[in-house]
Image 1: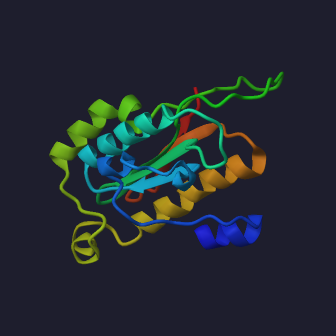
Image 2: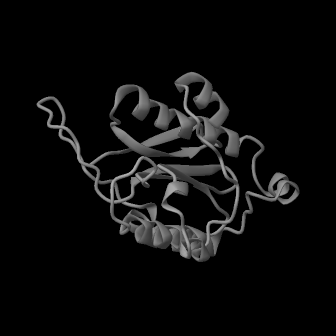
Length: 182
C-alpha cells in the first residue's frame, strides 16, 4: 500500500513493521515520527498502549512536517472487523459554509473502550500469526479490511475531507456499517 501511495503521490513514505512500545519515547527523534500511524494488533491492551504513547507524543510541542496527526486502527475477529480513523490531538480545520468541520476524532480506545474490553474476553482470534490465523479466521477478512481502510485514507487525501471516520464490516453477512464523523 505504501509503495502504491508513493508512486501515485510522489511521496517518500516508509512503512516500519516494529513493536510500538513505551520505550520508544526515550530518546525519541521527532524527525522519525510519522504523520499517520497504522495499527493492526492482536490484543485490546496493545491498542490501549498505543493510545497512551500517541497521547504522550501529541504533548511534544512544535510544528514540523512529520508531527503525528492521524491514527488508523484495524481490528478483526473471525468474520468481522472494524477500521477507525482518529486524530492525534486537534487539527485546525478551514472555515466552511458547506460542511460542519471537526477538529478532532476520538481514539478507538476512548470511543469504544468498553466494547473493546468485552470483545477481548469473548474472542481469542489471533491475526498476526499466519498459521494460527488461517485456522481461526476467514481467509479474506484482513485483506478486505485493508482495502476498505486504505480507501478511507484515499478519500481523505483526494477530497480533503471525510464524512465517515471508519466502519464495521461483517463478511459472513456481507454488511458494512459506516461510522459517521460527528
